[in-house]
Length: 143
Image (tube, rainbow, N blue to C red; front, side, top):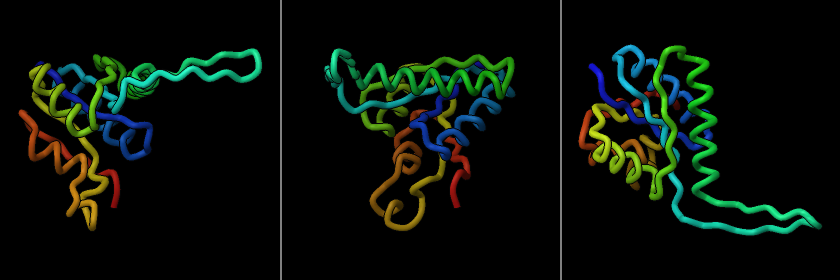
């Protein structure tokens, strides 16, 4: 199978576990992996501390997080073709929309929030599984 596998990352350990599994699966299938970080706003703030000025941009920070994860995955899974992307929207919406846009064959998510109150209210994994245009692989990342 060639094609595209998508995984979302947010810097958490559970997302990193799912991303590592996604990279392994993508490499085994000969597919490209797209690592996505969602951001909910196009927010830019200018912060001044003393004579230093910092520009904080949500999209830029999300892209940096996705790039950092992609770099780590390239080290863990040599030979994998991995791209990083920042997408505006809620995580579950961003994953589903990007999968549709890219014609992905698989979305990989962790199982955080699949039990208890999170299950009743909905989790990223539940929402993705219900709305995905392709197969969804839910990685056991939490008990």
